[in-house]
Image (tube, rainbow, N blue to C red; front, side):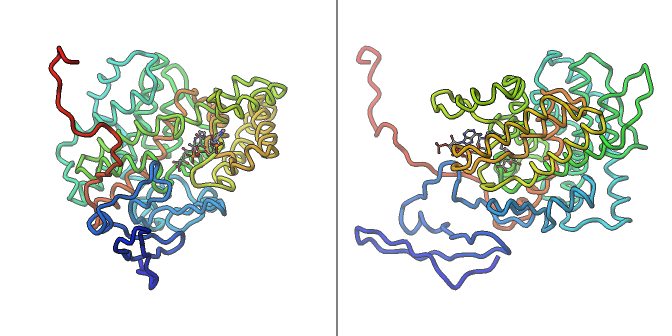
Length: 433
Ligand code: SDX
């Protein structure tokens, strides 16, 4: 980052000493005011619930322009990566900063492929869950438990141990997600196969069974691979910030990713794809859209248009457009062009985008609006949608965690507060309470 010639001066109307703060410029995007000395020089904190105007770190991984609807992974536009790269190339890019050449790709794919199995003891963790346990509860538990098998590689200050942990997490998440699914339907776990690509291997672990040959459909595999690319990273969103905050204490990467999975589960974040599909099912038919929209506009209803709105995108989410295209491809491949949910979603999107309530609040479809429909068409159950999101976002979390650990400026995250509770008072004995 570069220091700007312009400084920020904070002055007080009560005549207190004004204070100057340096301003830093990044490559693109908003400048930042460095307020690290604010408390020391003024005895005051900033106040920014939800971190609407706060940069928590400097990062070179992902950039979002919310007004232009632009998303760059290491400078490359998501629209180009979704067409000219696959998910493992994108993983390599996010982790290392550059796309792999042919030899680098072959080595990376081979390394990841040979880490897709989980320790056989992991099977016993599943036995403790109810069959109808939400897959995200299974993933929070099993991903955190992975740490118990890798005592040899938990030293976060050793780059080699950070690298093998990254490979293990990228490689094993699909296996654990598929195991969570198989456990929920009472079918035997399917071992990964080294002769299949990353996404084909996942589809095979999900849908093959011992009784018949499962043939992967290349169009569906490519669609899944694109879904993973679209969800791979997204600046300092809630779950990534959770991973960074957990990592800032020195926690091991498996524990940090488990924390990220827990945060992603929320319906305002990664749980929105599951909530969006359930919302479409609740609306049912296009004639019921006006009634639902009216409920959303009624603040007392607490009902939101799931899959719409975004903290950063105030124009459109480029991932939503690509997800809609992927939806078309998959439904055409499966002969489901008239899928009622897809047609309902497109009608709902059309009506919302013509309604001033949404336009005035800059609410547009986000990545979660269409992802549920395409995942349903791929045969993925609704409850597993956020698990797929977690599988994709693991690379983003790990790349951001890696960047934080290697950042000489990083310190344990410890926000302050504005205290509005009771002033000091004495404890009365119980007879006086
Ligand atoms: C993801 O951060 C990321 O990058 C996340 C993510 C990623 O890749 O990591 O992109 C993934 O989480 C996408 C978002 C998925 N969530 C949903 O689709 C859930 C529905 N969306 C909302 O909950 C909401 O839009 C958020 C949480 C996404 C953003 O909320 P903000 O930025 O805090 O905005 P806000 O709540 O202050 O909303 C501003 C106004 C409010 O109305 P007013 O008080 O001004 O009258 O817009 C309204 C909100 O009530 N509003 C909505 C709405 N979203 C916001 N009204 C109806 N439906 C919605 N979906």
